[in-house]
Image (cartoon, rainbow, N blue to C red; front, side, top):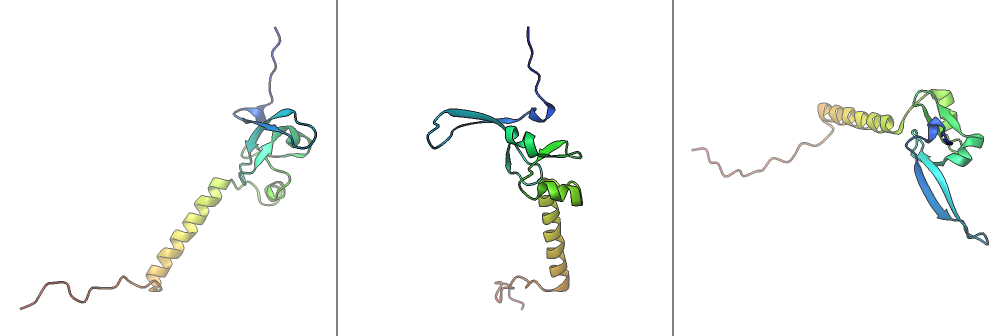
Length: 117
């Protein structure tokens, strides 16, 4: 009995099935994953030649985009962490604007229906 053991980076990967355009109309399949830093789809067969790896995420990152260079220069910054950081910045900015009085307060009604007698 023969077992084919995959590499760890193909664990939980997706499968893409497509027909290549042009004169070659054969159906092709590819194992794919998304880059943890930018969410770009990575074809793992092409990634093996020139792909990059993030040791902190323990996942492949795309080499064509800025992810490989940014990972080397700045370290690991996953997509979800960038979104959370942006929400935190927006929350702090909104709190500052409210505290500084830069956001207009909601208009108070001139007539509330209550009369003081």
